[in-house]
Image (cartoon, rainbow, N blue to C red; front, side):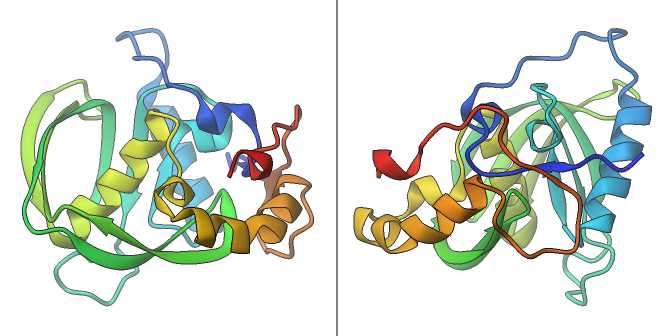
Length: 191
């Protein structure tokens, strides 16, 4: 099932996601729906809050990328917890399915250690680096109510104010299914 992507301005994107208790939802079915939704939107990562579910879960699939270092990365992360972020911070232009049409340079640490459960509720503690770490950090941020635009300077946020306002009103031209905010929160005025 393809879910509509929740757009910037919806309160769920700024809230803290809740842990999933084993057996309360079918994480296998939800993850397949999330992979299908993400593929339909040409994304590489998708967090549950982005489909209107305030749960600590995200999926990553880079199989369609040409970069050999990350093109085999398809994973489900349930109840992830960052153990450590380290390594030399590096800039990279990021975008987000919930904030279409905006891409900005974001600085993130190069190495990430994460505890999580997989789709079969098997526990893992793994270290990721480079692009894999960056993708995970971006999706993990969605579980804490942080958007990549939160890392921008006040000047950059002011310059994007009109675009962000249009996104929050659903005034966008994209080719995937979206859900405009039900209850508008004016993030733009907080920048």
